[in-house]
Length: 280
Image (tube, rainbow, N blue to C red; front, side):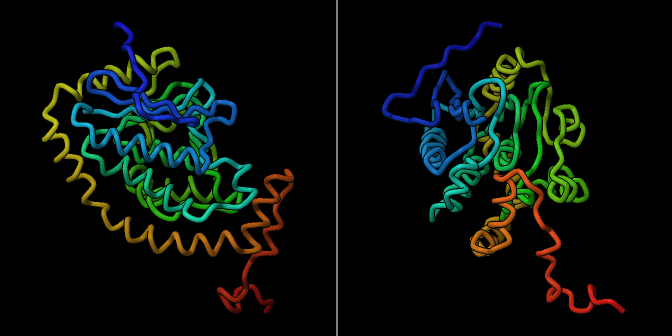
């Protein structure tokens, strides 16, 4: 199969992402391989701009979302920025990225090369389809570092892999191989790293042969089952901001940076379940 030729989209001056197109397809690549493609607030702003353009462009029938290099698709929010403190509007930008992926009237395919952790795992999860290389690794990390996803990253995951598995992924923060992800339905196919780009191109070309109106209608129907998540996200995001400001969140974040175990017993709140922790 001949390798497809991509051209950078003119008129955009991105620092953290690469935005390219070929006939029928747009490709958005997080280009921070030195940071395992972790996203900053600047990265999110650029992702929003690229996804908005891809959604509006009638010549685009499929969008590919990936990360530069072979080590990572994306490992979530940049830990250095998180340590310095989250910018106001950060959560809104994150929700906007996920909303654009889910609601644009064309399929978005995640090409997962390497680590897809935390927010990066959520990004690939909300894509319509995911193709992973054999070196891909999936997992959540929020409860280990004083954070969590306030909506789609939890609710949609339950819809994808089932409630029990979603609870396991979030409560235990384990790592899963590409083949384990395939088995639980988190990705659609696993290929060798050197076959990933070709396989994604193949899926894009197959989709382009189908009626775009029908594809848009199917996507809207599939999304209709989970439209309630938008409201839950809006409410939960307010709780998450309050959590970020708490001593507990700060404690777990600092424990991560200082490479020490968090003092979890310190944050068992007796007032939540009165009497449970009292000695008889």
